[in-house]
Amino acid sequence: MPSPDVAQANTLIGIDLGTSNSAVSLWQDGQAILLPNAEGEHLTPSVVGVNDHGQFIVGQAAKSRLQSHPQLTAASFKRQMGADYTFHLGQNKLRPEELSALLLQQLKADAERYLGYGVSDAIITVPAYFNNVQRQAVKTAGRIAGLNVVRLLNEPTAASLAYGLLNNTQQKYLTFDLGGGTFDVSVIDMFEGVIEVRASCGDIFLGGDDFTRQIHQWMLQVHPLSSPEASELSAHLTLLAEKMKCDLTFSAHTRAQLVWQGQTYEWQLNETLLAEICEELLNRLKKPVLQALRDARFSSDELDHVLLVGGATRMPLIRQAVTRMFGHFPRTELNPDEAVALGAGIQAGMVLMDQAVEDIILTDVMPYSLGIGVARQNHESIDGGYFLPLIERNSFVPVSTVQRVNTVYDHQQQVDVQIYQGEARKVAENILLGQLNLPVPRRKAGEVSIDIRFTYTLDGILEVECRLPDSDQVTSMIIERVPGQMSEEEIHASLLKLAAMKQHPREYQENKLLLAQGAQLYERCLAEERTTLDAYISYFELALDSQNVRRIATTRDELKAVIAHFSDERL
Image (cartoon, rainbow, N blue to C red; front, side, top):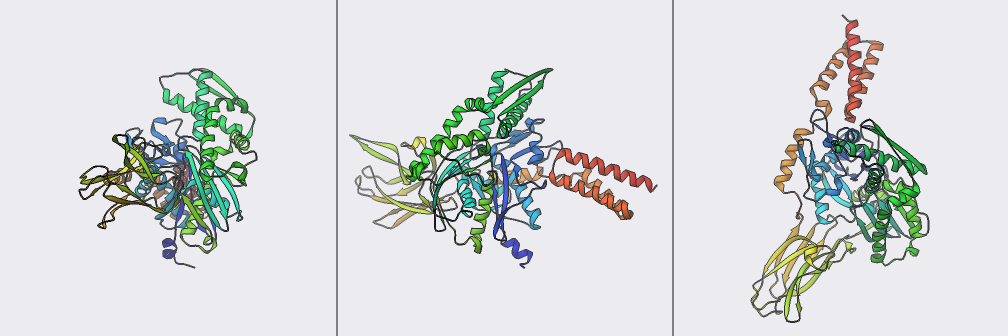
């Protein structure tokens, strides 16, 4: 049996950082397992809040305050990853990376509690259609959380791994991954132990939350409510909308009722009406599917299976839409909420070269194109601002490719190589990742050639190399930080800011004092009294680990009462 130090050194966790829920996994004893959180659940709500002590709370403890304290709680922040966006939790201003870091810290702590030792390395899943800015934001969040992000894994690829181990035969399939906030489609070709991602496409602003939002808007159309306490009303309606959406997973009809400012309002919803309300969203699901099939050069008839992934695919509305789209029923044998996390655990096993998965080869693809800005000769003028792709979307990664370009002006002294990400014909509509300036000999237009090589790694790092063939002069750059990403100074400031507020409930003076009193009394008790007191102390400690404010308050009062009772008996 390996020593704890050896086990710790060889531990790599997988994390599904989801919009609605997140999970942490591990490759253990030849299989991927999900690790429980402090409440014994595999799914941790992706919600962060500030409690009455001014401290951050994460998961169910924060989600339970979404309705009662909407101004102090943030959810669905994954949608803003990579954007210059600020969430306000009371007096606290937090970027999406910082909120994600708090969530990752909690998942890291859950893994460490399960394992009994520290964890530092992780694989984190991301939507396949996340661009480089968003991917770097996830890495930054991991760093703030104290994690070394070994690899980012596309969510549909992770789901394919989870299904692939169960079906190790030659087949073609499509993963339909509709989570809380993002939608991903990947076309997979599996043969002889190779899982090959042929194409990926998606919509980072389409998920289960949008269906909830549509129901919310419909509720306001039925009863045009308004209130000075708009945020509180909105929180109530969102909760009811989510409940009705979930009810329709198990029933063809549901109703909701709200008592607001002395009046009672009621809504009734069925599957047919829900389909009408969400018609626009259902239509949006089709475009990424068609694009992925087109890029993979597959027809829907060639697919052996369609795999449903993501919690939103539990909705009968979605399953019916998928069945109509492909002409046959999708596969649903894996829990759609857990498939991505399990796949991350399998990938962790692959990275660690575990014997049970070493024969599986995973190939992934670029979800977007990378290229440079170039000029073109148009009749008598030279027009700049055109996009020349060097790495096309859905190219297999890692990938390296070279393209030769020439100078466009007489006696040109320098070539400015601007690097872009996107699909648009004009660079103005794409994302500028960086610029590299290369001195060139002063000659006539077209006489100087430059070989530009793009190399993209599995870790999401782009290396750009510019070479003058005549002189072997080379200029290169590594693109890791891109526009929208936090600077080193901002990351350092975040570490300090979050450290000052991430105090665990165990560290609150009131709770520390009560535990100390319980421990002292335990030493003086005997027999049944000691057993009873130990049970109440244990309940309180479990409540503290859960960070659930109500649960902590209840068990604290119970422990206080027991301590007072036993103390009185000794007077």
